[in-house]
Each structure stands twice: as structure tokens, then as C-alpha cells.
Picture 1: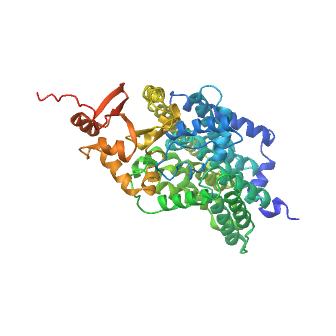
Picture 2: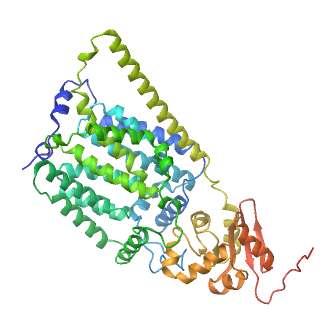
Length: 526
């Protein structure tokens, strides 16, 4: 039987220097210490402000509570009846993630969502760092610092109560199982990935990258990880509480987001960062990646294939991040892992004979100190900026008043015309009893009824002069929720006289659509 050492040889340089390394605690202790350190940093960032980061987090934590309250039965999702996520076709493609959120749904949901974000993000970073511990990479504790703090967008997005942090953890564990040739566990992990998040094809991509790595390193084909991952993915899709509707939604997601353009304006996360924005906010991560590229020795692939694998993985995530900013969750930690597996062995072979003279030693010491200070200051700036961004997030109670008014004054299940698709998560968080026009993704309404989407867009942009009959008869809504930034729409509302303001605060307004026979207020012609 092939051992893990035979399957993936340990780099001779790492193996030799590890014998002379200072005492290190057992691996579980190292991982526990690392987890605590990461937890402290992520907690400090997360609780820099009161909000649940990103609107979708409000939906995730509310739905997790509804799962707990209906367990073991699946609750009916009735909130978006005009979209492809209507009650008959709803698929929870984050199902396992939502189940894992359940322990955080006792008490204040807002605090629970933020605690969940801290825990899952810490586990995600830890899973990648654990690869350095498992394969005894020298200077691993120095690599932990940029793995946490080399990119501000990475820290910000990892602070969201969303599934990518969990998927990063699954990819870290999956990498270890691929390296160690553990097909049964890899198949199980792939199954779990399918139930957790719709980016489960990444596990297959890792298996393919490993197969290519083995071929380039050893000139042999190895399909075990590909087969194991494929079996787990197929099983996860078929043995699924939402089968076969989950297959249809997966197809929808592929068609929505894999093309060059989008049918409608989607969330900003699906668009790329401006080049200078991503380079500036992730400067340290890019510097580390470039240095690793310069240090990478293709000829050493026969001694240790892991650097080549991490080159493939980090390059893939870099290209994905240039395509869409939502993939920045994966790029920095795998770029740092690539650097750690590539650069650390080379540091052991550096000769310092040229520093015999005092002047040379002084110059080297000053240069090393300067680089260290710049790197530390850069990482501190990244962490402080991430905390500042959390503090500046939208008020988490902005729609509480309007939502509670709707819950108290409208029948359960009645339709509310929300004028922005991304207002839905917070509305659902405070008032899951009503139904709404669109939410989670505007494409869900567009794919269900393109003409209805065009009407919706025209009304919300203030381009429809007589929206009340359409809202009442075509959309079936008697009430309208709008944030107070829709000035064009509100101007039409004021001019038409067909709406009555029934609730208003500094954040939002609730309007009642007047019936066709109701008297209209007299217009002021002055």
C-alpha cells in the first residue's frame, strides 16, 4: 500500500532543515494557536461596526432560523413568487451552510450572523495554513501573517456571513486529501461541498490541477482524485433534498454568470475591480505572488510537486478575481501558499559568504529591516482599512421600522413592491411574512418573465408615468417599499396622486396604492 510519503515526496530541503528546526509544539497545538490568532484578527475587524456585512447575510441568517424552527422538515420559501425561486422551484444551494448557521440563530440574529462570519472566515484561513503545518514548511508562522492580511478586499469579503469562507475551508481540506491520495474522503468532501455552495466545481478543478501536476512531474497519468471528486459531486447533486430542481438552478447559474456579459445589471460583486484598485488594495499579495513566480524553479518539480500545484491554483484564482471581484476570497491565501511552498526551501540554500565584511552585513540588515517594517505597516494598514469598511457599512436597522409596519398592517403573504432587488434581504430579515417582487439576484425575475422585469425596471427608474395600475394589477401589490434614494420614482409618485404615504422615516417610505375609484388629493398648482 502506497504511503503518503511515497505518494507526494517531501522536499529534501524542507525535510533536512526540519530536523534542525527549533522545537515546535505538536501540529494540533500549532493549529489551535493559529486559529486563536486568526479569530482575534477577524473578530476585531467584524465587530468594528454593527452591521451584517453585505445584504445577503440578512437573508442567510433569517433562513437558517427558519430551518431550525421547521427542522427536520424544509420550510416553504414563499418570499419571491414571481421569480424562478417561487415556492415550487426554490432550491437552497447553501443548504449545509445554512444548517451550520443554526447554532448562531439563538438570541440576537445580527450578533449571531457576525459571530458566524468570524468563525467561518477563521476556519477558511486556517485550512490553508494547515497545509503549511502538515507539510512542515519552514517559517510557516511568518507566512501566516500575509495569509491573513495581504489584501483588504479579501478581509472585507471574508467578513461577510456567506458561504465562500466555508468553501475556502473545504478547498484547504480537499487539497490535503488530494495530496494524500484519500479518494473516499475526497468523494465525501465533494458531496459536502455540493450541499454547501454552488462553487463545488472548484473541487473538480483542484483534482484536475493535481492530475496535470503529476503528469508534468512524473510523466504519468493519475485520475483517482478526478474520479473521486466527480463521484462525490454527482452523488451530492442526486442525493439532495432539492433534487431535481437543484439541477435546473445549477444550469441557470451557469447560463447567468459564465457569459461575457449579463442580461441585466447584477450585483457589483460580479463585476471586476478597477485594475489600480485591486493592485493597490492587495499590493502585498501581488508582490508575494510575483516574487514566488520569480523564485519558482520548474526543474524542481520532480522533487516536490506541491509548488507547481499551488502555482496552478493561485493563477486560476487570480484570473477569476480579474473576471469578478467575488473571487478575491480565494486568491490571496493560495498565492501566499504558493509562495510558502516555493520560497521557503530556497531560503535554506542561500549562502551568506558575501557578507563577510561588516559593511555588507550592515547593508543587508538595514535592507531586511526596511522590508520588514514596510510589510508590517502594510499589513496593519490592510487590517485597519478592513475594520473601517465594516464600520462604514449601511445601518443594520435602516429598514426595521418600515418592515415592522408592513408586518403589522398587511396580511401574511401579501405582495410588497420593493423598488430595489438588493433591499430584499433586509426586508426578509425583518419581515419574512410578506412576499416581494425580486431579490437575491435580479436575474431570477428576468429569467422567469423578461417582460415583467422590463416593466419593473421601467417603473423603478421613474420612466413609467402611470405606475399605480401596473403595480396593483400586473404585480399584485397594494403596498410599495422604497428607500429614500429613488428620487425619480418618488417624483412620479408625487405627480400621479395615485399613492398614499403610510409610513416614512429617514431611510425608507411605504406607499399604499390607491384603488381606481378612490378620490385623489387635489393637486397644488402653485
